[in-house]
Image (cartoon, rainbow, N blue to C red; front, top):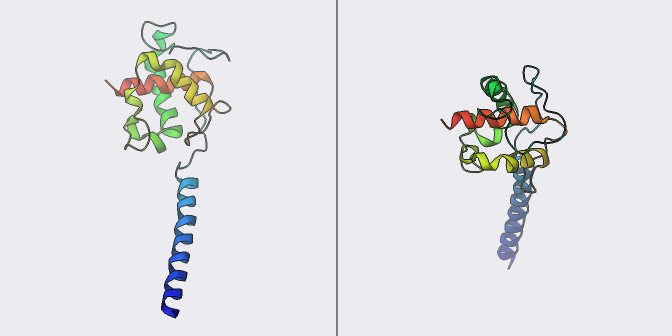
Length: 145
């Protein structure tokens, strides 16, 4: 009887320890999401109202800034996105592979980045303006090529 009780206690303690460990993994699993500033001073000011299409894509309103947006976006991606979505937007499978986004996903992309998700992605609307967000999207599109 005593051996059974000891075994039950050990199993209970192990279960509790695993539970706390699991909670810590969930809490820390998103990595360092402290938003990093993105210097967008070399890009035209897009204003506060979110656009529904990437203005830096060739052929769009500010397409002539495409190469500069890629440069700015690469830095912004490295400091804000790579920790979860992978270097050069190559996801390891735990988060969406951003290279799979298409042009028609522009509105979806800016909404997700600004508002975050209930599945772990934080909101960046107070930290990244749309210039930075669209520059990051332009960079992601460039690594697909």
